[in-house]
Length: 353
Ligand code: AMP
Ligand code: MG
Image (tube, rainbow, N blue to C red; front, top):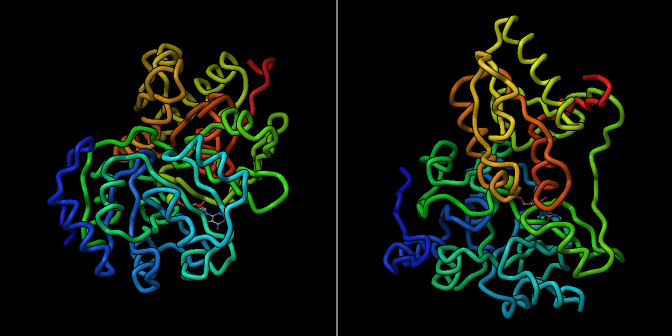
């Protein structure tokens, strides 16, 4: 049984925090809210505790964990060196959704880094995460609190759906703000490289750094169906996800045509839609889940995972969604949807409409 303790997200009560910290110090597993998604935490310096994270999530040992710290002053406990460029980023973006990949310190068990000589670190801003780190007085390794490959949790109910009975304690602090995971930035090479787009935008990093590159941009050219399976399945609901890229009008028309065809074939179709796109689908008998307004990518990001789960619970066989462009949080949204689609990306050219 997983013990669930409610906690005020702004002013976390000391009692549940103390209990959670005791579980961490005893080598147990605690799920807790961060500003991005819920994390599944264990004492980062205890190899047995860290092994428990991998077991609870069914996470393969080759996928390294992010180590969460109360503040940058404890960096020397987990990294062997802090380059000057990191100091600038830390001053600007911590606490917040930016993870830095730095040289691993000898105290960090290799289970955390998947055997590698770098370690991913971040200082979260969520008051509950901070209170837990302060009370536990150890760095906390915490990947997202979901089964491996599934959609990350943005509220306590999502955590329980995946991990009830597999972890000791869950701090329920309501819904998370950012809604997508942190940006993972490697400072190991000569050019700072975004390994995973996330809560801190490429534009903000470029402004701070001058030069920054994005690893593994998913290539899409012309109207193609990228071979399913070549992109690793991740952030995936049970239903098939199809992502549509291209100009808004042409994309909506193509989505409507495809939805009609699928409904005719007897599929139960789910649409993940911003409010502005609702009218494009008229009275079509499909399930709709709202991503809020397209005018702020912050809102779309915040609602993305909950909306995916809502459609999954409605037992749709296919989820259709459009791309929202690469600006700001749009890049992280594109990354997650492309992975959820596991290669099912349809690029619609204007003249196809
Ligand atoms: P999660 O916390 O579940 O969102 O996953 C952590 C993410 O950080 C994964 O994408 C990892 O591949 C990445 N990560 C963690 N440690 C490292 C590292 N040392 N080098 C590169 N990426 C890392
Ligand atoms: Mg994850």
